[in-house]
Structure formats: structure tokens, C-alpha cells
Length: 103
Image (tube, rainbow, N blue to C red; front, top):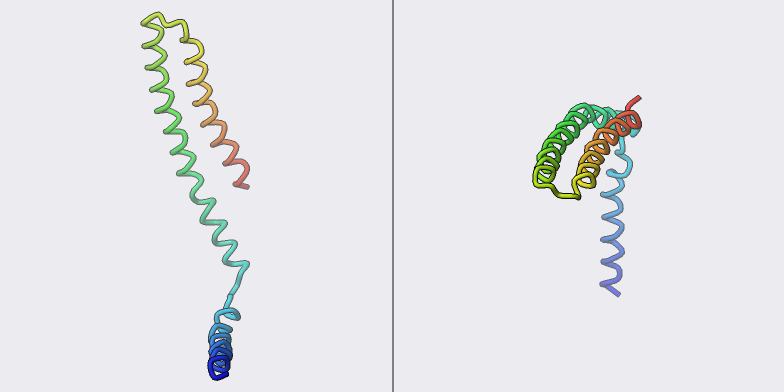
């Protein structure tokens, strides 16, 4: 019985002390606006990073395709198409994400 009463009083005490945290939520709209502004501020550097990654992938793909073409590999067109497709995907994905998330 004593243990049960102690648990009840402990629960009431915790509820009392934690209720201040619940009511101290502040201005939620301003927080959401600030978070949205922070996310949109990352898009310019992220887009440039994706373009740089696309350029590096394009260079690596060009070297691999050149090596295959020089050695006479019959699978050159398939390799060229896959590397070119990867570069196009990176560029298009960056552009679409930018237009989707920014006003």
C-alpha cells in the first residue's frame, strides 16, 4: 500500500514538473518558418555539389568509355549510355528538387 501511494505521488510530482515544458512551446509558426528558411538556404550549395558530382561522374565515365572503345570492346555503347544516363539523372534530379522546394 505504501509503495502504491509513493508511486502515485511520484507520478503527480513528475506531472507537475513536466507540465511547464508542455506549456512552454513558444511560437510554432515562427519555428516552422525559420526551419523552412534554413532548408531552402542549403539548396544553392547542394545543387552546386550535385552538379560537381555529375561533372566528376561524367569525366570518369568518359575515361571508361574511351578505354573500352580503344580496346575494341563491343559493349561500348551500353557503357556510354549508362554513364551518360547517370550524369543526366544527376542534373535533372538537382533541377527538379530545386524547382520543387524553392518558390
